[in-house]
Amino acid sequence: MVKLRLKRCGKKQRVVYRIVAIDVRSRREGRDLRKVGFYDPIKNQTYLNIPVILYFLEKGAQPTGTVQDISKRAGVSMELCPNQQTKFN
Image 1 (cartoon, helix red, strand yellow):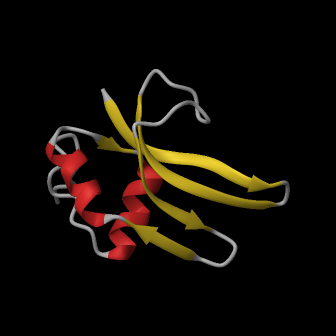
Image 2: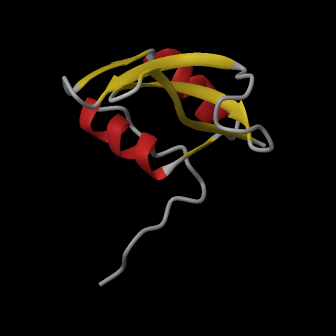
Image 3: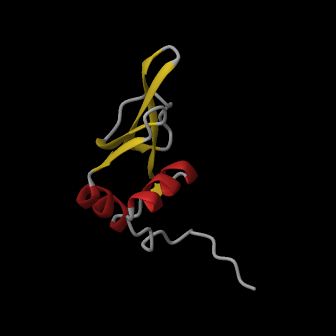
């Protein structure tokens, strides 16, 4: 199974995250399938390769909660996630 998750990069006290498509069994800094963006929490900057993200979502990749929040702020539709929880009133 493939997940879209954050991969930590950068220096000590100056963290930057790459958003990557990676196998679930891999560790956090393990080998990724493809880099699909980056997130800098200090400068609050994001870059997303939206066509690639949508491609992986169509193929069944599951984004982590943090990646899903970052994508929502950027305006990427996560409707293709089958396991997305919905709240009913």
